[in-house]
Amino acid sequence: DIQMTQSPSSLSASVGDRVTITCRASQSISSYLNWYQQKPGKAPKLLIYAASSLQSGVPSRFSGSGSGTDFTLTISSLQPEDFATYYCQQSYSTPRLFTFGPGTKVDIK
Amino acid sequence: QVQLQESGPGLVKPSGTLSLTCAVSGGSISSSNWWSWVRQPPGKGLEWIGEIYHSGSTNYNPSLKSRVTISVDKSKNQFSLKLSSVTAADTAVYYCASERLRYYYGSGGDYYYYYMDVWGKGTTVTVSS
Image (cartoon, rainbow over all chains, first blue to last red; front, side, top):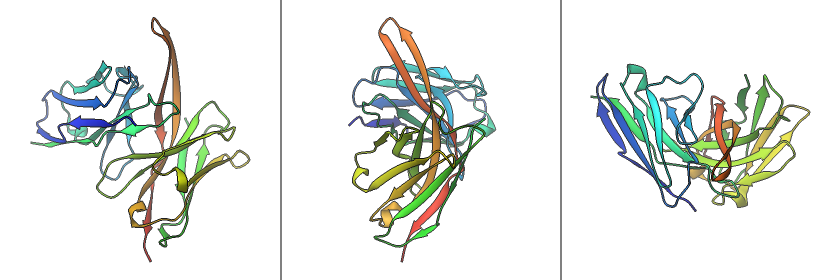
């Protein structure tokens, strides 16, 4: 099975900071990588699919990159509403087996 | 825009069967989407449980496969989750989600990207006697 890891597990940042979160797959998953944002008590929200495609309605300060085993989610200028937990998810496995990373919590410095 | 709403008992006894339903509104469950269940234990991360297509085809997480059944009821525009032999470890918020497919043809061949673009609000299920 494909295992997903994320780093860091948590980070503290200030409004306006550039934030980068890393996701690594245990084997190559091409660009079959999605990113979600989850706020406390809420359902996850899709931010990025196919490693770098921005979901409709998601602010352009969010961007994704990478392929193979290493991926990044970047928030170019952190806003107050961006404090949340971020999960990566692979959709490469056949038959389909979605696997989420353990999450990265972004909180206020 | 499709909307999803989970429903079902909030308390299940150990060794019993957890049963949840996800009602689909604003669209047809017979569209070209797959439909998923995802859970999140208290204070922990997300775990994909499985998915179903309107034809009845399913894929399950191998870690739960022996206990999981996902079914679809096209007449009611909903799909359901049953998880048997539950223990306290199955206590979680359970979400249903719809999956979107984006197809690309590139230099490397065909690319089928699946992602969960619409989620229900989630329902909390506690396993306790």
